[in-house]
Image 1 (cartoon, rainbow, N blue to C red):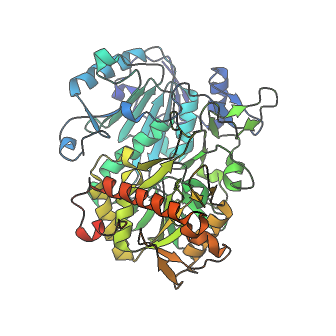
Image 2: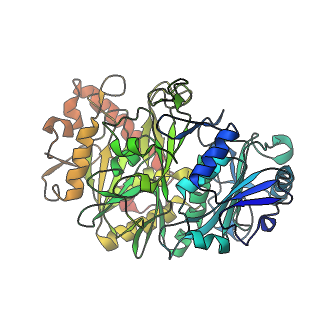
Image 3: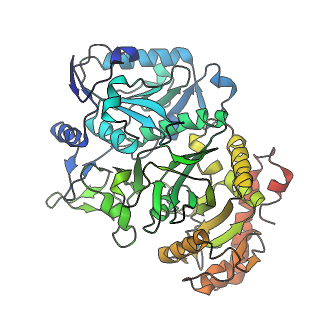
Length: 531
């Protein structure tokens, strides 16, 4: 075995059961990792300097292939079910042993990183992978320790990622050849059978979602930024709702685009980078993200002109889930370090493809809890295979696939912190107006940005509002730089009766989904739409 790289840790790979690898590359910088990725035919350089890679059949997360080893004491805390599938200890041991055998004679890339920008709550992690570009991805996405700290780095959790190692479902008890298995007691994650690097990132998020709430720290699937006066805003939303785009505001400093903790001291980013969707990306609509794509960035599944090497962000032929992974420092006006005070405002983002919800509304605390537990958005045709018409999606706490604990644990912490710090909550619909998908139009991003700016700046603090007759949300009568007719969704429909029908249909879906939260407080259940 030969070691290459910068300050290899004294805590070697033998501590992870890895024996007799070929060459081990420790904490390589971006330039070296790009060279290795190109040499190994893992990707190619684009005209803007980014490394573009293809992830094969897995162009997104594979939630049905994710498991948690059933062991004590974590067994008593985890909310077992369709999201958190139990995996037997003996089968994990057998699969892990075969995986370790497969790594003998392999080249390995190691990144010693940190999860958490706040030193008081950060967790040392290690990512061991057989792909150079996966190591580049980890280097871009997680917090990097100082160079002099790497030799003494001892990980609390380790991720071993071997995309070419596949499982045998019949033998291993997995669902397919791909697997993501978390073992909280052994502080280990093993990933195989998939080249989609997002599994690395989300495994760490799942770990923090287990550990931190047990310490009274709210872990959140949200982006965060801070205004000129130091006011922090959080943006919750599922994929495609605009979470990353709206938080990358040139008038505010970015704390992070996806995962944060809220402690007694304030908000802190879990990561050191961004993982932005880049389908239909343009310099005009999303300038900060567009200009962050350069050398050191990884582009996943973006189609590139083979002659000019120019990326075509409008081409979704490989997947609509094209992604760019880059360090936070590639975004202008970021917070250093990525921490902030207690949030003054929380924004829930939803892409309502039915054209029913107001583009902007104010929520009281009970309504905030209701919509946090609901986590509503809608998928539209073309975003996923098999989706031919808009469909409702409810994801508790806007991140159900990553929550090992019951949603009520996160909701309780959110409610307590909102009350303690007098945080205002807003619901912003970035979806359709004037009719559902196929009839109406997507709400203009410049109008959405104007609404968010007005809400965060305090311009709407004393604004006159009217309650939505079905959803009960308080809708401002006017908003700076937004046409008044846009704010009331019913008025944008030519057929008002059709709007009423569609609104009642969506309200019924909210009620049906909320039945699973029978333990929610009566006032929270009553804060939902009226049928």
